Length: 166
Ligand SMILES: [Fe+2]
Ligand SMILES: [Fe+2]
Image (tube, rainbow, N blue to C red):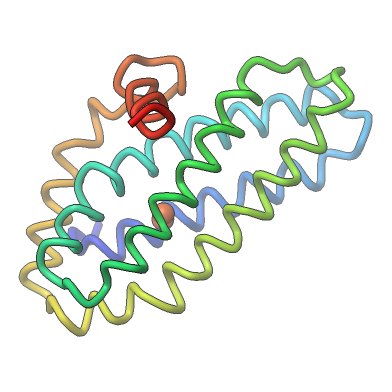
């Protein structure tokens, strides 16, 4: 397994995109299958967003000042996803808004992942190089076991609330 930060984050993205496809293939009335896919989406996104917000983004912001605007935009995209995830976590699949909200979340996150992978991760790789990316990767690996897995966990909730009130 690679300890390169960008490789690790891209592996997360693949898993997230797989869970999106599971939801899309579940079929409109397959509530249990939809619920299972959404549970997985919520867990994967909560962990991934936390690691980017707490480790990757602050380090990139500090080390590659040219990417400041991309980082700020990405924080806002995470914030929109966080809000949808919090709402989704409280909805039953029978609710008429469940599938619609999930679809909007998926659209948003696909767009966001595309920007990370195609637009600014390549610039991060170029600016930081292998050694620094491995250090950041190790920091993320260390933070992963205690990262929140549900949006209701205090460390995840705090981030969402801070973004709204500060
Ligand atoms: Fe992100
Ligand atoms: Fe990401």
